[in-house]
Length: 141
Image (cartoon, rainbow, N blue to C red):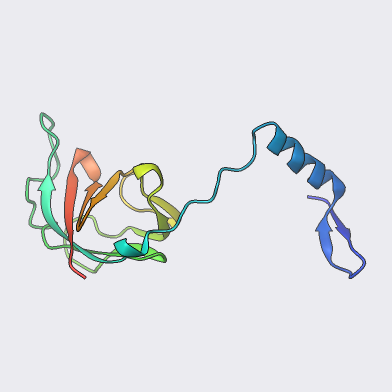
């Protein structure tokens, strides 16, 4: 990027950068809008109450896997992460999460399989997990 120095001695993008930005915008190539942060009503602790398996597939997880039942997910505008727990796949941490288009998006970090789907209805959340499994969570606080 080329910078010019303004009268106050501050670096500002040069004319070439401004022209390029306008050209991209007019060509429909502008950057996508920034993801929206998690709704405040979703913030809090969510507990896994069911492990649902997709029909007709072989799964690495058993239905109602005890490693997952009772696991607690912390959700806020700042992070999406599991509370410490033995067993299961609970090491992912998503910073600055959003649920754009029904998919988990992270500002930094990762959470679950790529493109993990999420759906929320009242105090229940369904989260797409590994191997076609869906975790059903209940909001606890």
